[in-house]
Length: 274
Image (cartoon, rainbow, N blue to C red; front, side):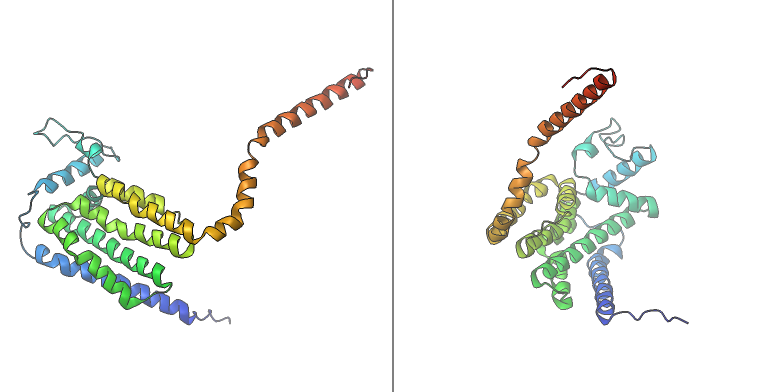
């Protein structure tokens, strides 16, 4: 009888750390949203109930068979509006999914806020790991709690009801984490593109401003890893110099093959052609 392999202590510790981090992120989101969730209604804010009209508009378009929402038949007093196509989207897609599952606007709003709080919390932990090179549970939890409960984040969703801006803010720690990886390790993450796209879909202005840290990270990484780039330069030069010669080489090879075929045909016919 073969016994199952014993998990490595390091893998068990990583699994435990992931579990504690997940519990910490959910707990932090629950604590921040508890004052709103346990009371009826919604706190007074700058946008009033405007967000509660946009969420059903997205869900209504889904039910009409439009997965990519580009029009709202409910806005502008029933005349319709292209606001879903032109306005920020990330938060309302998540909230519309919550509304479809729960049937409650308030539950959908709280669920969407909780999702983005957890995303921001875990993104801050990832950024700390990129700096330290290892999992520091206390530092990760502290960073995540500070990002989610900072004045800017709380003002966004509670005072201003700028939930789109809050959604984009929640994704920026992940962008910073990949920028830190580029600086510390000299490695470009494939997730930079998707994260930047999601930030832009969440809030266009924050997406534009997110290019600033990305460009700074690229410049700093180029300076720090200049020696590595110089070592790779011969390979890069050869890779760049090769494509212009490929069409000519292919064309010459094709002409040579045609010439060989023509010579073979003429030789079979009793003539010599070269």
